[in-house]
Length: 170
Image (cartoon, rainbow, N blue to C red; front, side):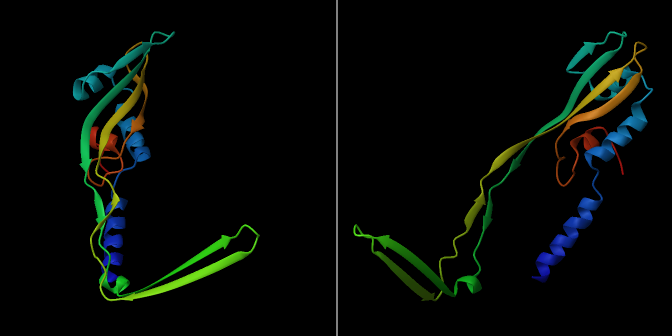
């Protein structure tokens, strides 16, 4: 039990140091608003799409940091202590054709060691990681607004892929 509490405390401490999408947005905005959009694209790569606005500006969609994470299956192994003396109760109610109900209760206690074969609690899967940013540039190509519009969790324990890709530090 102490081990679990210690691990939970370590996990909370590690997550408190992670950057969230909102924190990443704040840092990205402070760094890029007023800068030329071309400077952003030179550093991180070209946009995946752009849309001209009526005032001569452009709305860009940039996407980067694509990565596929493999997440192995998760298993749990029953503890011997939990299965040493197990009691199972089963109650069955049957109704006969004439309307009489018959209730049968069966209680079974098994003593000894049960099968401790690990049981799968979640199958293996893959997870796509990426960062997508919307950039609104004025007619002079200066960034007027920028925000992470689609941000997955990061690699490892990070809460924001955009924070990783766009080099946001806490």
